[in-house]
Image (tube, rainbow, N blue to C red):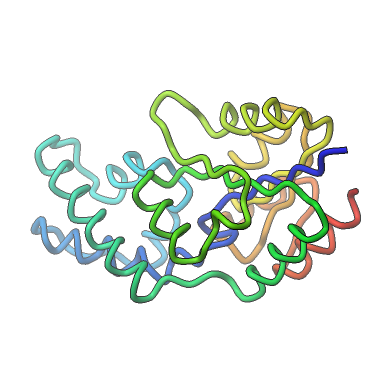
Length: 209
């Protein structure tokens, strides 16, 4: 039996605040806008990258938005290399699950450059069988279905921190685990299971198979 586990990345594996608060605020200043609070920036984490940038910028001006996106991408690259962090225990959990023959994948709304930079820094390609990043013509639910079909998984688990993670699992007959340490707040209540730590995520997964 395929034991397919699909992880969200931001707020689930990767501590996004270690990068994005500074990256976005620096970009806002670079385009002549005022910086925003940590809480406001993190409340948008989990959205597709273009939507994330548009909402934080708060402007529909296409030229300004394009400039802002370019600054964010450059700032994120610099901050990932210098300050990017995984949540405590993520490495140990992933290696343990891999050794126990779970099939591990990532399905994230992060853009390609961002996802690849994080994956390179933390050697994700050695652990994950597939890493799917955001595409304009593919929702997270569609990406989850793509992985389910590819691995012919009758049962699968989606681990994340936002409502779209849990909806993606529900739409396609999967089980969801919501992590309370991420950025979803009360949205975690919509998951089938809730975990307060990375260790608890591992424990729930192992109890399901």
